[in-house]
Length: 250
View 1 (cartoon, helix red, strand yellow):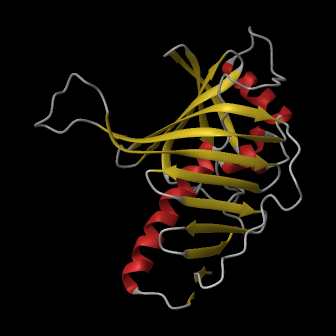
View 2 (cartoon, rainbow, N blue to C red):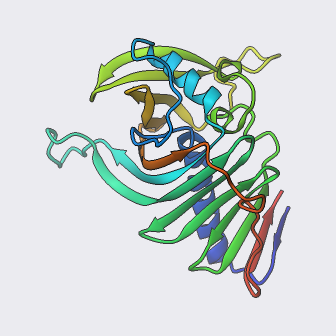
């Protein structure tokens, strides 16, 4: 059921597309930090990429920093084939998270949109539309890449970590979602991606690749990170401004 306050069909379509794109991407990418962490508490240099990632998850309780997110595609038949993947969309902004279940993904360029998880619901705030979309988080985070960021349990509870190749100066680790119990369907994990990989460098997560069933690639890098910082109790509280349009999705 959808509850709309002074809401047009055109805006609903735009908000829904933005919400799906931002929420799916951010569930995967906010597990990362870059090589500029201020107070690293990491594994030894000789550890595998998978063990470095486990150590990071165990030791990072809060963080904030900057991100660059790119959506990539392979060149079309009439385009040069020797220049690799083409950037079709790029956004940048700031993020903050706190375990368990809270984050802010604040896109600042080329437009202003903020995705907020307060532990109970996901909220998309679109400043240009003066519109807030609310959705219950429910089990949406439990078996997704967000469990790496928000969960208090072991990373291995939701994923099998598989060592990959070394490229671009990083050790890559594939995250294979574990099958849900009581199902024989090997693909029954409710993820929008066919491949999730984390690039580890200098004992820190530095890059994330998300590939969907159509071959679309999302690449995310993060920078200027502060780890295990103190955050105010109301850091993840959001109330729509007076006069804003509100959309609630069940």
